[in-house]
Amino acid sequence: MKEFLIQIGELSYFIKRFFTELPKRPFEFNELLKQCFLIGNRSLPLVVVTAFIIGMVFTLQSRPTLEEFGAVSWMSSMVSISIVREIGPIIIALICAGRVSSGISAELGSMKVSEQIAAMEVSGTNPFRYLVVTRVVAATFMIPVLVIIGDAVAIYASYLVEHFKGNVSLQLYFNEVFEALKFSDIVPAVIKTFFFGFTIGLIGCYKGFTCKKGTAGVGIAANTSVVFTSMLLFVIDFVAVFIADIIYQT
Image (cartoon, rainbow, N blue to C red; front, side, top):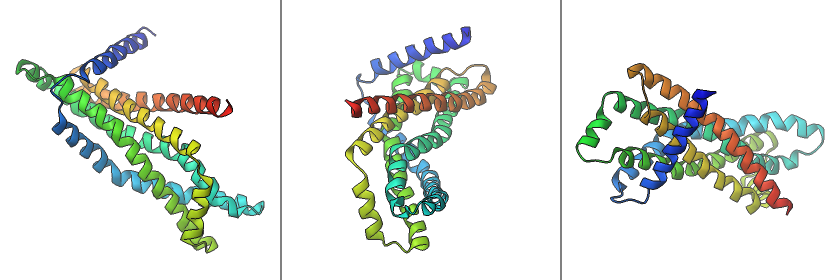
């Protein structure tokens, strides 16, 4: 319990320092663009493949049940709403937590134990602004982009299953998809992905920037960053769904 409370206190200070350094100049635009490319481009193949499989498996598993009730025509509506609202954002965020958060923590942890961060401080460079702020901001903006792409790929994969199983045309399928989806489904789902991205980048940077115990600590930081990030993603998702439900009811 004592170690947990210490971690919470250190993380709170880390978050405070991030928002303190965020508006300060000079802005590291080149490093920010580089991190956006690394996070987005290198995660895209994994996201696309995973989303494609999710769309196909979800449709294949749901189709027999809907056939029993004679409700196969509701397949496109059910799949699109489920993927956009919940399945797409949380699963893609978990995938990025495993790839992005662990990668950031391992990279910064290696720089920490090899004293590269200390060398940056001696040379007059602000390592926190250069290493942490850029990566957190990049993750905050790139995770929503990856989620949107993943949702589109998953829905298209669902269409392919319906096309070969039920001979459904592309126009008919996506007409039903867009009729089923509303702004109340899309907007909250997109908004919470920004918090997902912020959490993924922040925890990865925090674990890497505070890495200890030499080279062994790098592996520990990478491992704990994934566990901690995954736990926080579920908490954020629950809070987001709870708040959205209250807003809809009022």
